[in-house]
Image (tube, rainbow, N blue to C red; front, side, top):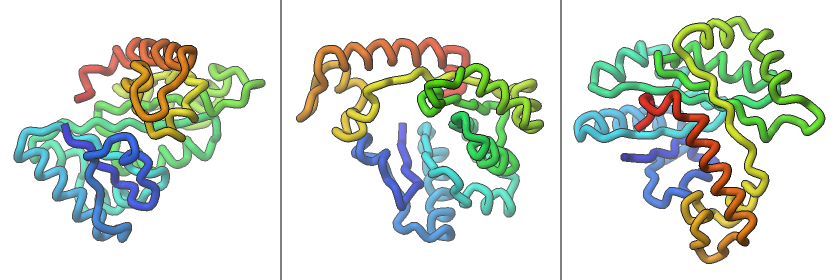
Length: 205
């Protein structure tokens, strides 16, 4: 599997996946050309590829103005899956709606990040409110798209600060291993993630 970090200005992903590839510059035209080459290479080598874009990135929208993106990806032999993350902020939904106009394959996952919801707000109520205000999101979820609630990991900031992956965090490996309770928090979260994503595993590499 190949991992591509398309967010050239904020390459957090490369801190966790050392062999992730990235575009040569942040220029949108350059990134678009790089993306096309990466997808074609993945298809030619029969390799799954995960491409991470930053929120609000315009490369997908620009490419979708030139080609029917889902069909183009299928034509080269890849099966496209989209994973969009939202929180309780209406701006999250607005950003996702913009992207869905450009890229909404049958295999579309809306991952609801509950950790960004204020503590005094019921995450289920906040999510229901978001969906009710978005005709596009409602229609999408009434169709083939699937909603996946992402469980809260209270020590996630420690993993980010130390650039440690989940498997190393659970095993206590790395230059700055987590303490025993945080290791157990990550293990519990990992199991919850496996359960949450079980219904959509057939869409993932």
